Every structure is written in C-alpha cells, then in structure tokens.
Image 1: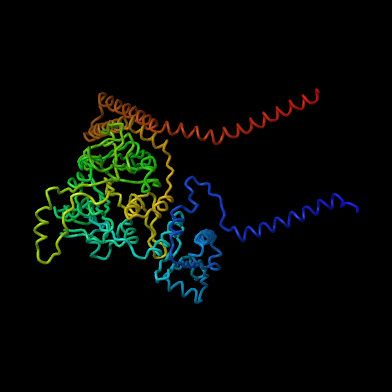
Image 2: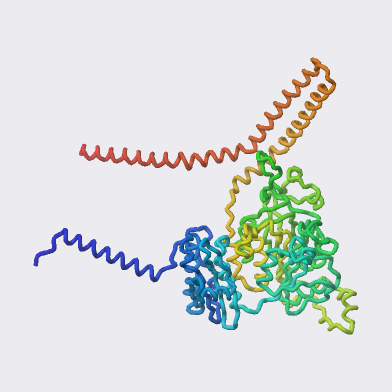
Length: 637
C-alpha cells in the first residue's frame, strides 16, 4: 500500500483541524456562555460570596422573568450590550441555584400580549424614534404571591447590577421584613424641605433613609414614649432631640434585653442647622450626645470637638476664578480604604466615605465592654473646637490653625461585651409615675445587667445621611435613579443589616463604588497649600492694598484738576513698581503651589512617552548586536 503524498497529508490535517476548531467553538458557545476572566482589582465582575450565600439559602423556588424588547432595541448598541450582560448574569444565577431560580426571557413586541404583561407588571418602556417602546426590566415572583420589580435597567447603575439582582432575590426569599425602630430629630423622612415640604406634597426623603424603608419595616418613635416595642429588632438613633429620663431608660433596658443599637451623634450637624426647612428647636439639636448611656456602654464622646484632617480633607472651590487653586477643607473628610477596619464585615469592603464636621470617640478606662474602632482619621489630624468649626467658614483660615497631633481619631466604633445599666439607682421618677397609671401596661422589672453581650455601633457624625456628600439622583423614564459616588448609604444600610444578623448583602453594596484617587497628587496639594498659602494670602492682601492706594492717589490728583507734582508722579511710579513686584512674587508663589505636581506629571509623561520606546529600542539594538556577534563567532569557527 502506497503512503499518502505529503501534500495530501498536510491538506487533510488542515481540513480536520478546521472541523475540530468549528465544532469546539459551537460546543463552547452553547455550553459556556458566561465564562470570563475578571482582571479587576476588586473582582467587580465576579459573583460575590454574598450572592452565592443568598442563592444557597433559597428554600422555595423563585421565578425571574426578564423582559427585553430584542428586536425593537436592535438598533441601540449600548442597550443591546448591556442586555447581554444582564441576561448572562441572570443565567449564571439560575445555574448556581440548582433549579431554585427559574429564568424566563420574554420579548414584549409591540401590540402583543407580552407587552400587555410587561405593562401590567409595572415595567417602564423607553420610547424610540419609531414610536415603539423598549422594555428592559425584570419581574421576580415567589410561591406566596410576593413580587419584586426592576422597572428598567438603567445603565447609570450598571456597576450595581449584581447588588440590585441579589437584593431582589433576597427580598423574595425573606418576605417578612425585620423591624427597625428610629429615634431622630433629623428630617430623614421629608428631606431638606422638612415638614413644610411634606405638607405641600414636595417631600423628598434622604436616599439612605429611603433605602432603609425599602429594606425594613421602619417605625419612627416620636413623642413621649417610655418603652421600645418588643418586636423591634434594631434601634437606630440619629442626632436625637432632647430625650427625657424615661426615654433614655427605655433605650437602656432595650440594650440590656439584647436589643442592638446604631447611634449617630454629631458635634456640629449640618442637617440639623437652621435653614434646612424645619425648626431646630423642635427637631434635632446641632450638637448631640448621650453621655449617660455612653458611659454605661464604655464609650466617651466630646461634643465640643471636631476632627480636622489635612490628609483626608475634601477639596472645595473657594472662588469663581479658574486660576484660584482648589482649597482643602479639613473638617469635611474624604475617608478611604486605609481608614477602615478590614477585619469587621461592616467596613471590610468600604472604599470611600464623605463626612462633615465629625467628632471623635474614645473608650472609657475600666469598662466591661470591648471598644473596636471601625473608622478613623489619618495621623495628620487634630481636634478643633466645635464653635470654631461653626464660625470659621474659610478653608484657609481653618487650615492655618491646625496642628496635627500625629495620631488618628476614631470616628466610628463597635461596642461589644457585657453592659450594666445606666440607672443603677433604679428607674427614674417619671418612669415610676407613668408606670402607676391605670391605662398603661406595667413595664417589666428593671434589668441591671445585660442578658447577653451587647452589640452597639456608634458613629460620631450625622451628616453621613446628607445626599450631597455621596449620591447623585437623576430622573430617567419617570424614575428617580440614585447613583452613589461614595459608600455613605451602603455603610448605613450595612450597619443595620449587620446588627440584624445578616451579612450577605454587605459585600455587594460597597464593591461598585471603587474609588481610585490620585493620593500622591492630593498629598502634594495639601503640603503645598500648607506651606505657601499663608504667603499667597499676604501677597494678595498687599496687592489689593497697593491697587487701592494707587487708585486713590490718581483719582485725587485728577479730581482737583491740578497738574500732578513731581512728588506725586514719583509716588505713583513707586506704587506701580511695587504693584509689578507684588504680582511677580504672587505668580512665583502660585507656581510653587503646583511645581511638585508639574514635576510629577513631567516624570510620568516621560515614562509613558519617552522611556518605554527607548527601552524597546535599546532591547532591539542589544538583541541585534548579540546576534551579530554570534554570527561572527560562528563564521570564525
């Protein structure tokens, strides 16, 4: 038998390789549709452990109906690409659930029963140029008539896609919401407009509060309450109004019974300041504290001190002049991952927090509880009087008064361990008198120590709720879409969730707001401003004074109608030279403010533009020389 010619053998090999390649592609495309490699630092495109835990805990089947107008949206590339990602992710959820999640895809074409179903389920359609509507949403149902909807997958929330989907599944799997009690004097439920806005139908609740309402059965405790209802799981206290002895006693006994508490106090609350649309006398005080309870819990808080931090100061524009450098405002803090306790599930995944006029917490010596810092400042911080923070509004003036102490200050802490009552001498008088009333159920006997270890989280800031510090709210297709740029809301909801006893959603809320600031540049800016800003301010003042004196001298001579004397002319010339000299000095100082940043930029530009091509060219040249030498050595042999 004659062997095949080499050419025919090679041709057959190529044909078989092509067949295998096509078959392999078809097999992979039909079976491995969601496989991908996630090279992001925080694994933004990999399902988190919280999602896997939520899916693994499903007890009953959940149906997810994905409505997407495939044919109508075919001409919109961005929507089509995003829809593919949503579909792939939903299929991955279904695959992980082992049959507990049923995935259905529906194309609601115009004038079909599928479109009627989408409308009936509350989905929002986006109009197109042709007049047809694009439906792009999700409806989830469980076996007991529970229903959750994402009306439209807005691309502004693409980074939060996994959280939105897992949250929907979590709500369907836990239809009974835990109960959250709230004690506050802040207008959390009405927004910046306060009570007047609510009366006029213009209330816009703060986003963090609205998230709590969506997650939990929230109950506001207002008026002269003397007990915390037994069905409340977690108590949130945010910049409370003046509490009576009976109310403080109620909180004390709630903790001793095993209740968990989240507290926000503030040495200078911007949300409680006048001008927020409500009467501060009837609401929250600007300064808040719970000294009697804090002492019993083993924590100390000075309501007269504000943390000022040079390294974590936010940047604010102090002038409309584009040449004016952005000033750092040391009492508005931009905290980063380095400032959080990564061993605690509450703060382990936080990326950024934006706070304003926060205070400092310290442990009480000899306390029975354990004080665990969760959030702290940098070590280039100091404490300044709260009154100074309220009255000195210019960033440069505050900057000049800060003398860093070299230590960081704790802004939030977890308190755990056994707790004793804050009322060792028995219930206060107003509780005893109220307890004797005929129309009230008697209070249970006083507990003097906790039944189990307490779990309390205290934060020395209440402006964390302020929308302007962490979220942008936009209207899209009739919906309010909140897009966070910091983790303030995530921290608040995570803290409540953690105290409720569930941590599965915590890792999802914070992973999408990954902040990658230019920390080196920020430090250079802070150092330059601290070094040169005083000199720049003095020169500006001198410049303004010289200009005013020169203007007065010229106007005075012109008003009299007299000829300018030699002495006056000399004085005017001297002022002009002084003016030019001062402007020159000011330009030099302003240059000094940026010289280190410009030098860093030049180095990076050289590395990116010049150094890499030079290295490649050098490598190629060296390789060519090496080859030439080897060739010459081979010829000599």
